Image (cartoon, rainbow, N blue to C red; front, side, top):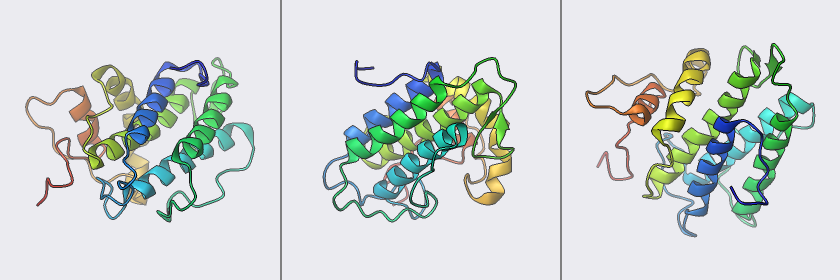
Length: 204
């Protein structure tokens, strides 16, 4: 990470934040309206959702205000928005909040049910949200996956802890069947209901 990036002190979260930065930086000026692996959402909408969720995790920890828009109904309107500034504000808020979390606490508050997790699981859940949407954005814009096996393994661990109660709410679709030869990244993506080979032209 660069010197001006705030570290949360939680390795999985910091790596996930960097994955999201990498994906967003690579979005071309005309790429915000591209389709993504999130059905019916454009790159802009996935981006707005990811930003809102990071603010939501920070707010759960600190009691400060959450996002001033609904992350689950993102507008996709990027008029007048500086993507880098919009993202960095959210990531900084999340990183600062998690940097202040007590690693020895039994539980910390988080947005997804059951709304309380161990500090490691909570920080990794925040990371999971950032990392999976980093992948969505990267694939939508034709970029390589920002996920690594080293990051995917702990993300899968926390995914198995939190995702099932979220599927009926539409946050994640049904898990896809594993495929022979799947690496750790593919295993994670399929568990989250994503086709690892997805591209904008995959289904054409």
